[in-house]
Image (cartoon, rainbow, N blue to C red; front, side, top):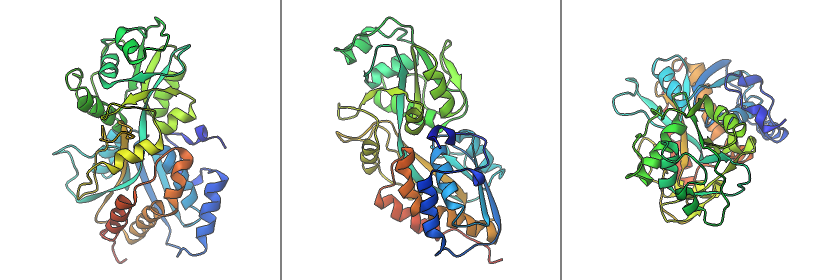
Length: 352
């Protein structure tokens, strides 16, 4: 089954067919897993982590046959809201809560994978593109309107650039991808970028919005002259071209998993397991690298749900990490993985 079929924002994932290798991975683990009581876990949020969630949920099902895990890609912002309102059992988010907006009840950030955010483009005749942060900032806030602008030409002295009009494509929903992309522009182009960093941004008139990473990818793919920010997994699945981005060391780096891992290694991990690899130092670090988390309440509502949630997260930190690269995500570094596993023991699960 093609990876593009895995990107469905509102699908019941417990019945999703996964690639044969994922099913085989799960089957190999089934015999040793203690079977849990029947439980259903409902989650929503980040579309950035959606492809990974789909594969790992499908592989987890044969391991715990009585546990059903459902996940909808509705954007990190909606996921955090639904989690705070206890509409879902867990949520996916690519950015922590801002100060003052977190749920009152205690909860954990469980990191799962990391990956690049690409700057994907569709420009006829341009096979390779380099972008500095200043140039990208001017493009996305509407100061640069054609592809042969002098600033783009300066970043790409050997590329023949057309006079095609630029169409900026962005997320229309509350998005962790938006927050991390604009966070990069805020850090890397502080004297140019004026739109701030948040899960929603007041984009200039004339830009086009789309829902989810897959929505942005599809709009870029079908619009000549388009440019947008898209997670690595969806960009590759859609066959998009993406730019090499100038990092904090002054090197142009093409989005790749190795560059994402270098960025994460350079990040400081906070006690709550949040960390920020955006614009990280290092010659090989990809500067727009996004973390992503599953957020879970400390005090689980029932024994069945609590045991199921712990088993699912444990699977992510075991065989799930082996599946990450198959859908274009980077595994967690061993240091973060160790801390995440240790945090599992802090979940409070009722005895009955």
